[in-house]
Image (cartoon, rainbow, N blue to C red; front, side, top):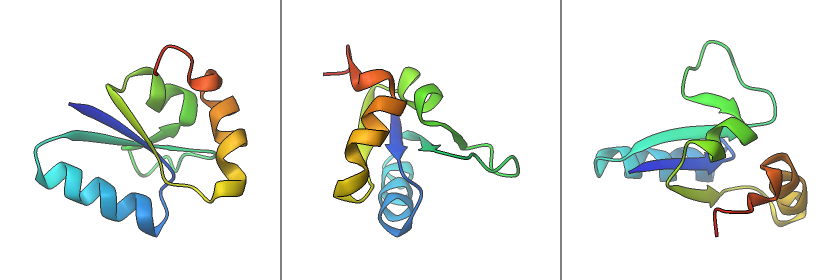
Length: 76
């Protein structure tokens, strides 16, 4: 399964590691992707290729992340 994690902070990285160990493909959607990290991409690109999306951002950032992901319409 392809899982997109919005957020690459401590929580997102721990979740991503666990999901990878369980055999899933994981990408991280971030505001400004690091070109040296191929698993990082824009939030919209990450959500667009995922079977499941996990929000690993502070509560106050959820609305901004949802907007950056195209509203997450069709992913519910």
